[in-house]
Length: 215
Image (cartoon, rainbow, N blue to C red; front, side):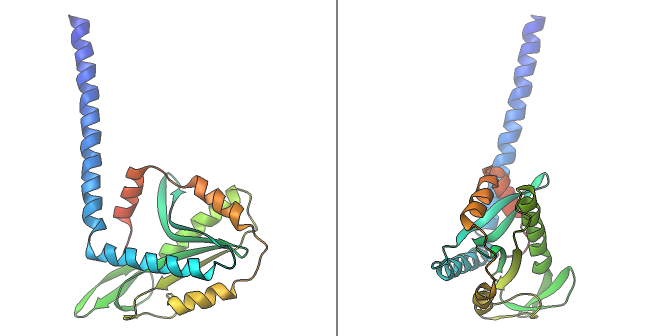
């Protein structure tokens, strides 16, 4: 009887753990759905689709390889990169912003004004620098030390004002792409390398999306 009670206790303990995990997963999914369908996230996704379409069109003749919404390992966590573009020029890391209004200031936190409302905006250049550093780290780890890495923050809305040093618009993205020099890189090899390392866990990906700063 004693051993039976121990077995039941262990069973109940395991059941409680499973229930806790299931509840946590359901809660995370609920939060993700709420954020996913929020107005800001919808604008962000629309902006990402717009840039993805333009990148695909720009690189068609050059056989560019592109990973949109790349989930890359970052230490013991992960980060989401809006667009990873692979070409003979190396790697282009693109952060997309679909916000409207006016962005002012400098440093880590900027001021984003829409009509009469203002709020803080995490500097997208700093955000993209984290992504660039992460990509550079993985390139070195894979033996691609000499691969050039470029970055760009792209604002897609027509009714957005921002300092020139903060990013570029769609036309600016086209100019940047055309200015990238041929470095003799193999885009297929680079693409496959980053595709294989992507985070696959759907819960971890959902968690990253809920924590992503300012679309």
